[in-house]
Image (cartoon, rainbow, N blue to C red; front, side, top):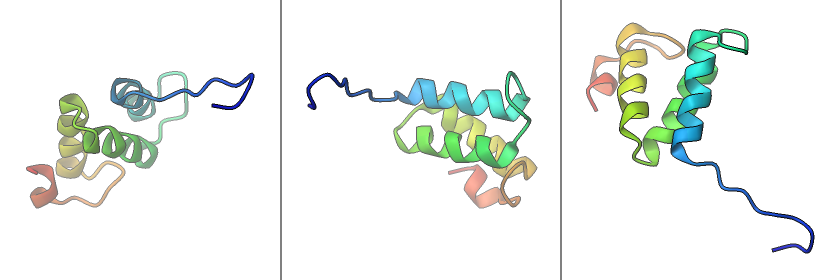
Length: 73
């Protein structure tokens, strides 16, 4: 660790919360593509809510091309 600096690890919950803000335009501009990116990051870390939300985005084609095979992964 660098002297005087703290390292900070973003948890999958924090990533998922950020993605939900983009998906709903809460405090940030509505941005489905950005939301899908953040949901994907949290989903890879095993966060179930993010996996579900990303699946819904693939099902509905929000921020990603519609892809039913990806939606059910």
